[in-house]
Amino acid sequence: MQHAVEQRKHQRHPVNFQGVFSSCTVQGEEGVVLDLSLGGCRVASPIPMHSDTAIQLQIRPRQAAPIYIPSAVVRWVRGSAFGVQFQEMAEHESKALTRLLWSLPPLEQDGSSNPRSEA
Image 1 (cartoon, one colour):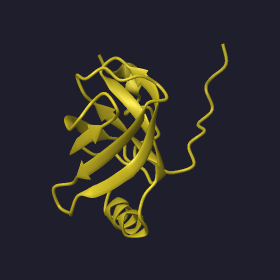
Image 2 (tube, helix red, strand yellow; image 1 turned 180 degrees about the horizontal axis):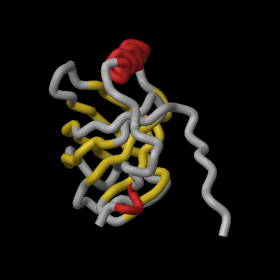
Image 3 (cartoon, rainbow, N blue to C red; image 1 turned 90 degrees about the vertical axis):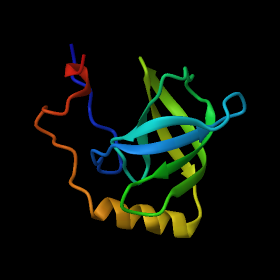
Image 4 (cartoon, one colour; image 1 turned 30 degrees about the horizontal axis):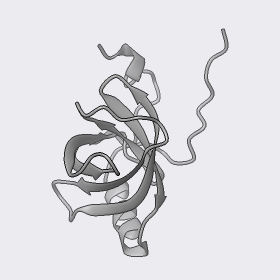
């Protein structure tokens, strides 16, 4: 069995921020934003989502103003979490996200944050 190769373009940062997402079938649902990067994030939510669903997402960090991503796509779903790839956002939102990420520690790469080890 081959090991999966990390294909992410952006470094992930462990976070636990409130988020609100909407799609054509879901309006204003809350979730928890996890593993945030410049290119996407993981969202935990009891709302069932499907791969390739277009969503809008607002990330609400405690120490900064909300960041709005008007165009994102659900790339994978595992249990009550789903991975989101950001498609586009306003330049000022991108700069705010960059500033926020610079203030956060990177995700540990030693296996201690391996999502497969979570129950």
